[in-house]
Each structure stands twice: as structure tokens, then as C-alpha cells.
Image (tube, rainbow, N blue to C red; front, top):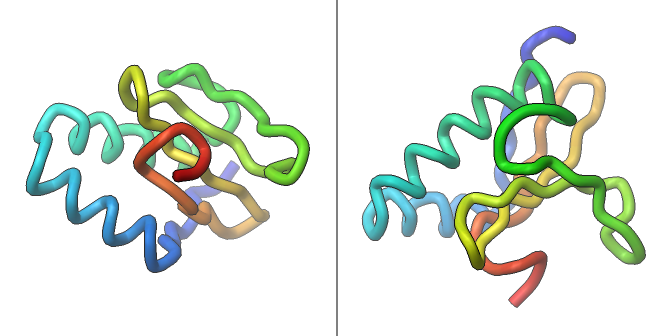
Length: 89
């Protein structure tokens, strides 16, 4: 797979900036997830899992005990939907 372009929705970008300020360890883990997902979105660290029901088509990776990175993938793009909480607030 070629390297995917990364796109954040508005809320995910704000959560990304919050992690940068609040928690360097989790921030670094998210950066590593993003890099890994650009090449291998469905395998790797963080226990990647496909989501179900109304989130069908999206995937998640566990960044810590209570927070997940929720994302979807097209042939050219890695779309980041959420970086805090467990699937939704």
C-alpha cells in the first residue's frame, strides 16, 4: 500500500493539539499510530479493530486505557475522526 495522506476532522485536530499540550507519552503514541496507519492501516500496534453498527467502516486503535484513535481509510486518505474517549463522548 502506498503512503496515505492524513486528514483530521475539526474535533480530531483539536484533540490532537490537546494531547500535544497535556500528555507527551500519549501524543507520541498517536503520532506513531498515524505513521503506521499511513502504510498498514489494519495491522500493528494499538489493537486495530473494525468498528460496528453506526461506526461500520471505521477502525480504532487503543492509545491508552480510556482513549481511542478512530479513523477510516480510502485508497488515498487516512481520515482521523477522534483521538479522545471511547468511540464518542
